[in-house]
Amino acid sequence: MRSVQTLKEDIDLRLVVEADLGPSPMRGGRARLWRCPFHGERRGFSLAVWPDHWRCYGACQMHGDAIDWLIRFRGMIFVEACEYLDGNRTLAHHSAVARTSRARLEEAKPPDAAWQEHARAVVWRAERTLWSDTGFMARSYLLNRGLTPETIRDAHLGYVPGHWNVWRHMDELRVPCGITIPWFDGDAVWTVKVRRLGGNTKYVQIPGGSAHGMYNAASLVDHDVALFVEGEFDALIAEQEAGDVVGVATLGSATFTLAATRVPDLIHCRRILVAYDADAAGQKGAAYWQSLTQRARVITLPFGKDITEFVQQGGSIKGWLGIALKQSDSGSTDTCGDFSER
Ligand SMILES: [Zn+2]
Image (cartoon, rainbow, N blue to C red; front, top):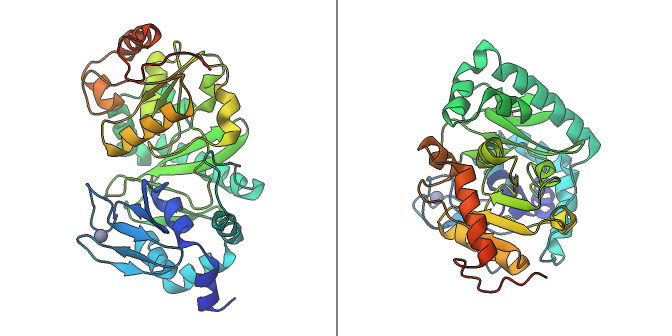
């Protein structure tokens, strides 16, 4: 193994953190900023991450290097953290790529075949567990969100049992405990996200996955209207309720940008509806879509903080989309003002 010093120097820590927390919603100089997961930050972005170290400027003031991050966030012991940095050539490669300038539309590729094979095995095992006695609580959680058993099965959701902050070794991968959400696209597995059932950082992903895919992209094929929502569960419930009217997909977060390789998925769509949460990240994401294409329209829910809550409170997604489409086609409500097609 290379020296600990070399391991730290060869890695771009920002990519390690991105794999854990998703894309950074803000930047400041060379640092990328996130909500600090260690003190459960709800407002603000106190966690600053540079290529070689991180620091919280908020309540907890924690700081450290790449190894400290792996120990504190992923619960690795020192030796595991060193082995992870030493063995992760993909990460080192991406670090090298990240040092060069990035295009506004980022390129994206699924992980290598070996990773995908392991990920498929994990997804399959987790899916079996979800439908066994062990999966009862996780199943109840999903059903309470309004997802039908059919939707849950179609999405191949699964469950890895254990306390929310535990990571398991499964099929050569480190897997956080919780509900597994695989990102399939055709034959490829892009990533496996995990919804933890406790703690402040609700969503984590199995290391090695690509966070630059498009969840549920297949549903866009047969529709000329696309609906983009913030998260996977919102996408599933919108698809369940209105999948015959619109194609529903998500980039996984309001702050994610579209990979250039995904643009063809949207060429045939006459209208792209963007329903993000009414917070700072959601507004920034919506503005991004509008800067990307004049076909994008931002729509807001009549009530509820997100699509899941809207449905739980009796809202009709079809009814809402019907009105939103009529308004966006007539140009009467959107703030964009310009509805000429490109
Ligand atoms: Zn903190």
